Length: 146
Image 1 (cartoon, helix red, strand yellow):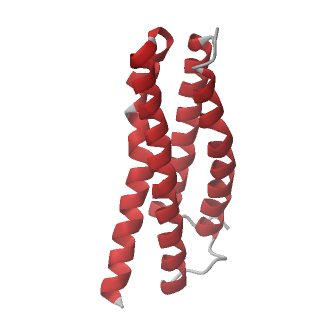
Image 2 (tube, rainbow, N blue to C red):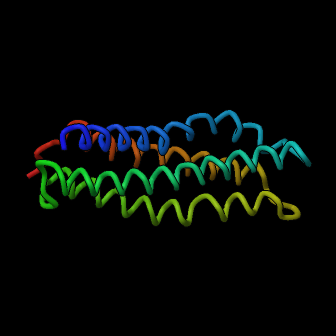
């Protein structure tokens, strides 16, 4: 059981890295979006969509392994840092579902203000990174909130 638990921890940490890490590489791409045209724009948007998709699937693994860690580990669902993490998780799920795809679709519309859309995308990425880093902080520090 100890080996299985350690493997689940490894998968949990790896999926956290895969959920957060790729968003940092998007910043240089977002800077280039306002002036990108044609195939270059398609490549940038494809990269952004792939990162969002990777983060989403890594998030599924993250949640699944997190549930297993609570069920198999020493913590309960009433543990303060787990409750705080879950609260942030649910808010980030709603945020992610509504944040990226609609903005990315607008880049291909006729007459789209790419500068404004890129600024919105940059804010969205930073907001999402902050949410994920806050969840990571709860998981690593495990603060006794109450």
